[in-house]
Amino acid sequence: MVNYLPSQIGFSAIKITPLHSNIPLGGYYVRYSEGVHDDIFVRTIYLAANEEIFIIACDLLGLYGHIINRLRKRITQRTGVKEKNILICSLHNHSAPDTIGLEGIKGYLKDTLRVDWFQKIEEKIINSAVLAKKNANYGKIGVKTKFLDMTEKLIINRRHPRQPINYPLFVFGISNETALKASIIHYACHGTTLNRDNRLISAEYPGYLIRKVEKNFAPHFSMYLNGPCGDINPYLFPTQWDFNKINFDYYFKGDFGNYNALCSYEHTQRIGERLADHAISLLQHISTNEITNINVYTRKIEIPIEFNAPHMKFMDKLSTLLIKQGILRLLRAYNRSNVSYFSFIEKNKKMYVQTEIQLIKINNNILIVAIPAEVFHEIGEELLAQSPIKNTIIVCLANDWIGYVFPLKECKYGGYEVFGVPNLAGILAGTIIKNTILSMYKQLSD
Image (cartoon, rainbow, N blue to C red; front, side, top):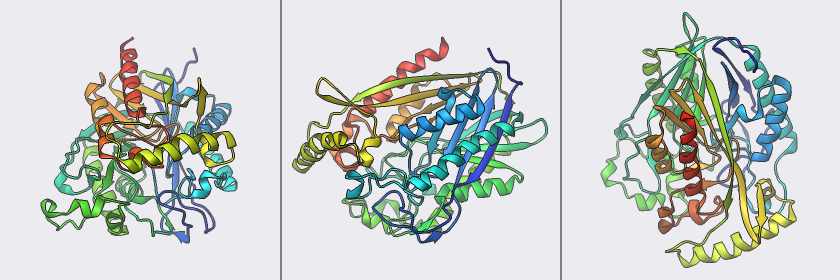
């Protein structure tokens, strides 16, 4: 066994903002950047005790597993940290360069992702890991949580707007012997405070959050990790509106265009800085302890791709039959489109998607559950409730991107998340991922 110095923590932030315009932006539909509102970054934290780990967060829409695996191999070659001990996630930023490539029809017919930009960003992600380990010094970690009152109007369930959201804000403080040096902020909210008409690169609400926290504790490093935000949007209605009188069908039905029109940089700043206020308040009273042990658990899973569900509407059945079950096979065989980045396999004439679940346990009181998808908050809340570790966080869009995962009961409500293009892993992914994690929980006490 390799002996590491006790309780080592290092961190780094490297700017990944493109140097030129006319870059395809991720999310919504195909559109191109016309400038930069604020910079985007890759941020990395290195932790070491009996094991070494990296937690890497990118201001991006998402990253496929093929790309993550390539990055892990190269980071291991440069740092010696085991591949399975590297967590790479995206914040699901819809105002960053496109890294998924499924916003337009071309993405389903050809590989449209910008190779030149990917090469540059991969180098920066790797360099961020190298720098974080190089910067490591003695450090301690602590955590505080807080449930935010829904009357603050920060987030909303876009599918069931009147449904309460019971996912807490988590704040991790990192200190040396004398001062608070870094923090990790974790909450659940889609990166969509800016709308489809925005043409400026931006770090979205996490950018405002991080900048305010870092300024308050300067010099300071802060990182944001996104949680089960699959059905959770930023709250964009004017705050003076009476919540009980809003016509949610008007704003949330169809393609969400009416709600999307409410997006603005004012909302982006309001939500980011209000989350920062809560984080700062918690960090001022946080106590930290040495890292005495780190354990990492990973499991490869194969999800059978199934789209047929009870209570499906006719158009959902038609799109499933033609687009999903037929064209998907053709595109996979063609292997020249962005769909080929999915880890599809075929067994006995049935298609599966391969991906990974990762659990990182720190000090027996912190657990990071890394899920490769946009997870609905109900699954996230259930995983928190059943976790044997007190401070459990659900980090989404981690180590892969397979689209939306949701409880099966959501099928009766339809919607693009369930039967639309963003769901290429089928309707069983949520159930299989949740049951896999519950099974992995049993390993934690072994």
